Image (tube, rainbow, N blue to C red; front, side, top):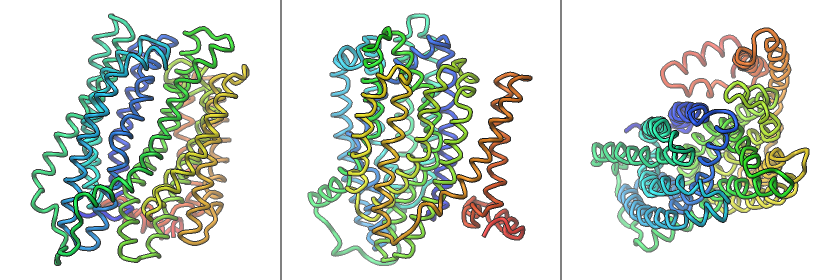
Length: 535
């Protein structure tokens, strides 16, 4: 059970997330075709996405931000050499999560008819909600084990559990959708959502096995005793909940934005003359054909957040202010290197990508409008994690609430503008995350010392601008002669290569970024340093 550094832990979680997200991307691309493709596929995926919009909120309510609270408290107790406190934090949190997960799963099942008929205004969404409800309980239990391993800064169990969970989830989806499509899209969508339940069950079983194998060594904190550090169960629950609630509120805002899109976008489009089917299809362009692509950079930032919170908390417990600043700024720099080119690529290929994958170039304007989220969501997430690790979870919660409020208002207004339609919701999301990220950075500047975000952004912006121009030129030229598929694949490969070379040449990558890769990283980093490409 090796303890990982911040960068190594980030890399391990990134690899697990990448594999998991690749599997997730596979089902996102294949499910619409299994459901019929084109507008029929978009309608089926909308039925799949509607339950997920409330499921995400329910999941936040059931876990209440406890996994991050577990990782923070465990890392602090480990830094203070208090293994007994580590154990008590875990068991109290496990019971708390199991109880809340069971309650929320039950409530979700009971309100499924109301959601389908009154919120989504589509009875077909009922079956997917019922199939998804049990997953909340199992994911809640699983999150307790993940929080423990994160706090111990041992990231491999979390990473492997992601992969195992996703394999079972995707396998369940494909099998059930194939079987149920002949009976109707509503049943096929329900079969797809049930994959979340089977995946969570297997994920819990895997983590429990790892815990059972290593249970005698998990609580060893080294030489010393935590006698006198014992906290009563009631006080421990208050400490966990006190830290978790602001994180929970922050976590619920993100799926709430998607939930508002599910509730507002179709109804506003119907109000301006769309038919029910056309409005649902337009929402499908946003939910099924745009958000999954924009969320790709979150693979990296989610891994960073999970590793960053306990790492900063551990430095804080040791009084290492310099370490806190270094980790927070490294997270912002690495996030910028990922978010800026991702947003650029999605914008310049906004029509070609959905055309290539789903035969729906009509989704292009929606994806273009939403693409900027890739930058600002990245910055919002990593800055929030730094503030949470410092013990200020209320600040990012407050800032995200401000951004979400602006997003809600703009979604209502912009979606009803005929020339924008569903793209209006994309623009509203970009503005909301921009505002939340900017407020976070102002707060972080106060607590870790002055820094300039422009110092992190200018290199990836320059490299991305050149990359974007090259990608657009290649895509346009190749499309004429070879078609959409070759144009997308060729331009993406060329764009990634161009961005990588450019960002190296202008000093955007550091020695430590490359060295964090296990085994080969240090050698490659030394080679690049000898060439003068990293420092």
